[in-house]
Image: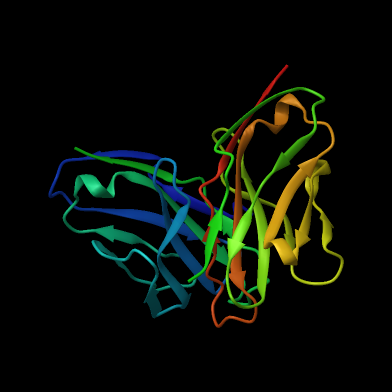
Length: 114
Length: 115
């Protein structure tokens, strides 16, 4: 099992550009999450999904969109990149939404917006 | 609202020294507690977690953590650190029995172990 994979690893965007961060998991997990980590800060939840076709906002959703057409994939879309979106983005998954369930994380995507 | 505080942002230790990283949380209800670790160039992985029962929980690689309810704390400990423990450590909390597994993370503690 590869677990949770993310592409790309690094990306530099210009202000106003758009891009999609890809996330795929091969563990057949229903729940998937997107977090961002800013320097000196903890991870903040952007969006999450409880299953294919169902998504919901987390703590910091502004400027992002998500979709979940399959169980495996949970892409994160930035439509108009802004310098405030410079961050490291982590995707995670868990088999259920039970509060005791372990979340498994991907390696992260480091995004810089100039 | 839930929050997690990790007061030690950077910790430098020599090999064989003992480690204790502080974690305090703020929440009015019952919580689950987690410690995640991120080794250089790797993804976050779970070190240990506490739900209920014995407040002293043991995790991987010789780490343990103690839940002290009266102090709202869940400090991470290791008796003797190794160079390979150099990493960033995150404490996290969620509401037990919540409808979704939303983790609230602390700001992390960067541990550097000198050989």
